[in-house]
Picture 1 (cartoon, helix red, strand yellow):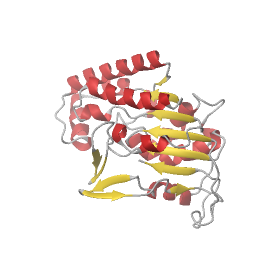
Picture 2: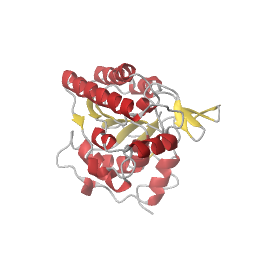
Picture 3: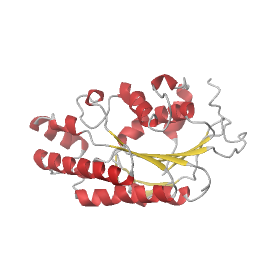
Length: 272
């Protein structure tokens, strides 16, 4: 078994002060890539780390949302912000990703920008380094009408937004993110169209490491996916089984104390 994961990681772990706090905000792309993200972060940044993530399939930045009966609060209204008020002397680096879900929920562009700007405000109050990921506009434009209707039915069955209107709103939101990045001096990361397959909003699994290598490379030198550590599948399973601070499962409220992930190098993982 890989040395970075042992079954007694809770009982024999000595608390170590983190050198850096890493914040990841996103939805399904972040959720699918999360073990890779944690592994890459531990290879790139000097540990131990405090990792904070607000993520989830179908996650919204302002609405309660989710899928398969599991729902989480909007990222802007989650408990991650009160948690970040602790350990204020530890520097923060943050990535704000997967911003397009709220378009499918038919949230006005102005409201989405308010939520994202609010996240930026809170992070900048903590002197965080921040990066934003742009929407995959090019891949959305290549989607045919028939494919759009199929994907809308599969991924967002409650949505009645038409293809032309969605593209117009996505373009407006992308422009607003570009303006936000310019006025706040925040880099905007454009994902490569080649990283997407049939699904125009979810990256293919083989490109997760490359995208996150480039995202982390905005704040670290000479980063590429060769930095990815060879974590065991036990550790990857462990990270996937961690639960957030609060969520509802078929309308039943559930909670988990945070951080509820602890690794032997002293890194902690807290989910919201």
